[in-house]
Image (tube, rainbow, N blue to C red):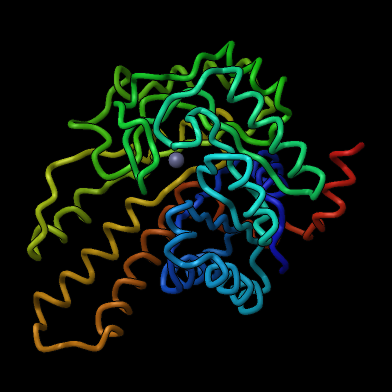
Length: 337
Ligand SMILES: [Zn+2]
């Protein structure tokens, strides 16, 4: 199947009442892990690349790996999404290269670190919407600021510093015309999301529900939503790692979100943990091995397992066959109408 718009996947997910995991990639093994998990579970797929990932892979490599995935897995509807675009220019370069969806994160200034004003955010996001929709490409925006820093992106604050204001979210959606809205409800990027099991005071699902009540038809996005399972932390630490104890977003809270308008769930850390644990295990247990495939194969398999598990938990499993691809030109025509 050709790459399709993210809007098509999210609309379909809303009809079916499920969520779709958006998994970050930097290289071939991660894309293969996601595609194998998608085939096994019959899931639609959102693959996303941060600015850091695009720089790491020189983006053309990444794009052509995605074309290879589309060729090898023709039964899987898939989206290539720019994660946390920091400026109109970044989003434009992604669209020019063939991304079918972009995030304009105008909650931060173009330095990717300084919280911006509401007016700046509206202006930048609206400009990306105009440019992207003309080509049928989907736009995700963000209101409020996530906690933490990842790939050099983030204000470095805790997750509660800039929660999304529900009334401001309503205004933001109306003024920008975006397709999907990322909200800040206490989650953070990276492995250290919560210093103990989150409660309603630190992970504000009530705020999410309030936003959904005011914007029942808007696709919500949960960022920083790895679950950071103890099991994966333990493998890393058993084989020489030194992770501090940490807690992520429990699956049942994500499932509550999915019941309340969440259609896209960003997961990166869990896959990083799974791969690193598998690599550490091989290198510690078999110090004589030096063929990269000896550790990359188990790493890829470990990531595939996590992705397949999330696809089941988010409800996207079994839905790959529901999609007749809508060409981007047709999406563009619909936006014009
Ligand atoms: Zn994010």
